[in-house]
Length: 411
Ligand code: AMP
Ligand code: GLY
Image: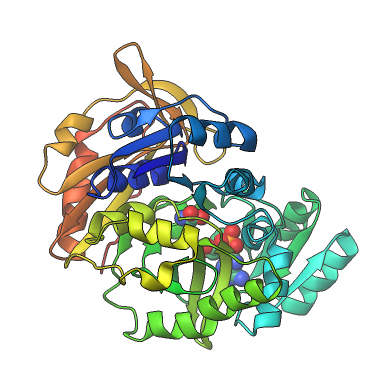
């Protein structure tokens, strides 16, 4: 089988790497890709948001399956454009991707499906925002309704900060604050059958001890030794299956990766958000531990035959990913800083490097984005994998590099 991966980040590198190791996959193509993806796939220079161009590339490389990595092309209808040419595509339609593209839509689906989530008010005016802040109380949670790469949310005790954030957005959601640890639970689905993956945890804030602004994610690990044993079954029953069933009932079935961001609160499990694609960086440690081949799951989801595909199998042990970001992230990013030490990191036992915002400048690997790369390590335990990942991080350097020192700590 020939697979085309659309996207350019760490998630797409992890997907392309797993597919390149899959015995059922003869060729992996990617567009636009990055220097890390170039080591495991043939790159093509195509705008990932241009559905006609992506579909044309899929035809020209003879793709049997197109995997759309990021949310923006999904929300723009790229999966629809590929499917219209009769090519199997992993990733939801534009309509179903609204589950991520509009937080208000996601709330409406959850209400209809009886899925537990934070109470919320959708607001368009400053007066509505003020009333909602007073109704729901501190800590205040204010979310930009549209796509914001994980950076559109402010959680604060300061009412003025909450009002200021809302003033910068068109439509905002004011939410009840959810306490308790967060868990990312991904499920592969064809719109009917739902196959959950292992739970993972992401670290969203830029600084240690969850300080500073939200980012796209600074590190992740899986599995979660502290999570309740019945968590996956409970979330499948109360969140994932009802949501998939509700979208099918509406005539806009969701096929692809359903990402449930959950809070395990003192009052039970609640959905913080849905995403319509693999999470980044959680995908990096998850795919490092996936023992069964990836392509049958993705193809089964794309073709409505997931019920015939065996459940995913996992390697024992754990995997940890530590993101290294460039100077200025998350407010800005720095390009062109020369990166050294990735080979030394990969020479370590159980360690590999996943590229996100990297580029080549002559023979030099340089920074080209906010999240530059992730060092991923597997080990017998979370502690072992964590130690190996940080050995890898220590081998890598570039001007202004920043990483958290507490990813998967204390677990
Ligand atoms: P979202 O874009 O909805 O995933 O929000 C990004 C991050 O903001 C989440 O991962 C949480 O850390 C935090 N967050 C979002 N909603 C809430 C909430 N209702 N209560 C507490 N924290 C939240
Ligand atoms: N890791 C968070 C996200 O992918 O949205």
